[in-house]
Amino acid sequence: MASKTKFQAIRGTRDLLPPETALWNRVEQTAHEVFATYGFGEIRPPIFEPTELFARAVGGETDIVSKEMYTFQNPTGLAPMVHEKEMVGTLAEMSPESEMISLRPEATASVCRAYIEHNMQQLPQPVKLYYMGPMFRRERPQKGRYRQFYQIGAEILGGPDAPAIDAELIEMLMTFFDKCGLQGTELSVNSIGHAADNCRRGYVALLKAELEKVKDKLGADSQRRIETNPLRVLDSKLEYEQPIIATLPRIADHLCDECKTHYAAVKHELEQRGVIYRENWRLVRGLDYYMRTTFEITAQGLGSQNAVCGGGRYDGLVELLGGPPTKGIGFAIGEDRLILSLQESGKGAAPQGRDVYIAWMGERAYATAIRAAKDLRNAGFRVELPPTELKFGKALERASKLGSRFALILGDNEVADGQWTLKTLADGSQQKLTEQALLEYLLKP
Ligand code: AMP
Image (cartoon, rainbow, N blue to C red):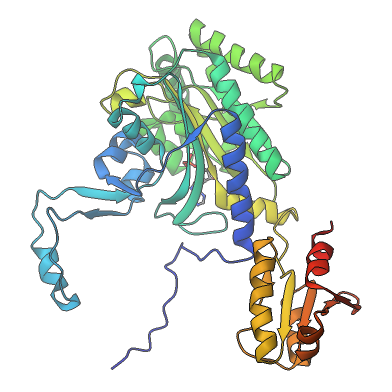
């Protein structure tokens, strides 16, 4: 018996529908165009990878890897074609050695894996790559937070130790947001030094000691982080922790000379490029291979989930994944949030109506209508050709419901004397035009 189950998209996932998808396309097209002008090429890595790749690159201790990944066993060999009922048996037979794979929660790990796998260190350095596509994290869904969400990201791998690389990447990002029409963007930057005793490690030890002194005044999460990852305490959004955090030592005062010089040069380069930023000493990343430049962009209209982009330098990552020592820096834009912000500020896509609705009646007129539709579409117009015959009154009603600008009326008379009727729906005016004159009229700006 057929079940009456009404299927719904899984919690945290959603359908992107017209007319909103037109806005998604516009944003993605803008990314293709802007990134190309900075010499980036597109990479399309797979959507699933060995779990171990993410465990290593993102960090086994992070929430993303420890709680939020969609992980499953990849059966070894070719799975036999089985009937649904036999499926359970097949799963049970999966060998214990079959590898664990995960839906990607982010794409930097894949890009670095691809850089190593395809020996991209042999290409002229640095290699500049960008990607766009869905990512998967089992987070608690809310506005601006989904389990399948989309990122547009870019990575620069290899090349010299030059602050100009950091600055140009950020300049490109801000140009992209500007071209999208994103409102109220704020760029925050910071430097988190590098993992050495005379730099970040020394700072973290000092931070930990200071946090121990105020431990009793902090919440449970922060108390735990003093042990696991003291830098993460700086991420806290808890109201009552803010005055305490404000008194903690700041990393900028504890950077080694090289990191200090690098940070100053990045800021100077941003100024030369006219990129407006503010410094936020609390902008940190909890993983060892993150170093020096970190940045974040917030935009308006997003409530508490107002970060549209995060990025940073990660010089140790390629090596951590088994490649040669390689410099790296990148960012990931939350496309869902970017779209939300554009919609909130009235920059969403206008519903797209048809240009021309062809109202036809009669066999002969239908043959002409088919030809006219083809020619108009060839010329780039959006055309609606009703698949069944409608009385002219009904057809015109449909035409305005679809938001058409014009109705092309084709009946026996029009076909017989070669003078077609074009109705402008906004004011109801009508004119008679030859086929050639019609095309010229429509093409006029
Ligand atoms: P991350 O990869 O965590 O640094 O995130 C980069 C950007 O992706 C964030 O600034 C958000 O805009 C976006 N993002 C991260 N997680 C989600 C999610 N669950 N839903 C929607 N956007 C997200």
